[in-house]
Length: 289
Image (cartoon, rainbow, N blue to C red; front, top):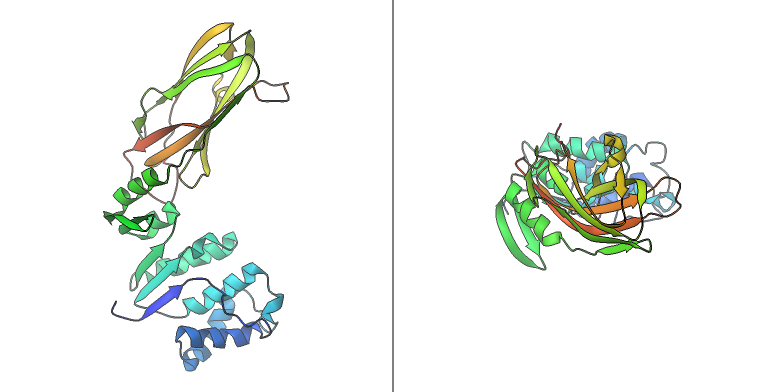
């Protein structure tokens, strides 16, 4: 690599706990290769960015972990590198701090090459035009970020399923009519349920989960005036899920069947099926309105 290299990795590591925040700024800057006269000029900017002005002369052993991270990022951000390496640091800190991180990165991106290491596809989509997918120590793809994120989705789909239901109730089949849809198409959920007796007025919930195992959308029958009426024997349902509008990617799905007034769910199917959405650019927002 040619040019001055900066790194936002393990922020706060190496702080001397008995030194104050101000003293640790100079120590950490020396480790990062930032000259003392540069820190003298930027000291006020670093302290202001960290929001630690009231505690800057307090020993860092009294800092919380979040305060450590804020001070570490503020020091590293004072460097104006040609190449900036960022390793997962945007996953830590409070919302206000993360917003500052994003704003700082967007400011320097015009003149700085970013090398971001992250499992968060929204961060990658937001900042990167080209991406490298690593899986078990091997390079699987290098190129367009949208393609890279789709490949990463496929590699990360480790399905750990479980199915539980009340006695006498069996989920025979649960699947989407089409396992791949465009972002603006209707997803039709097909269910086959066998019951030893009738169940009236039940409700169904479908939760869509991304590759980071975070719930990004939920569809409920009661929000669409749909009641699940189960009779004795075999029951078949086709439920249209309209205007899902998720960004491109593959989503695991949870299904929960319940009835108001009962203390336990009638049926729970965890990570039972998946749905692939295509046709949109991957962005840092999970929905398209």
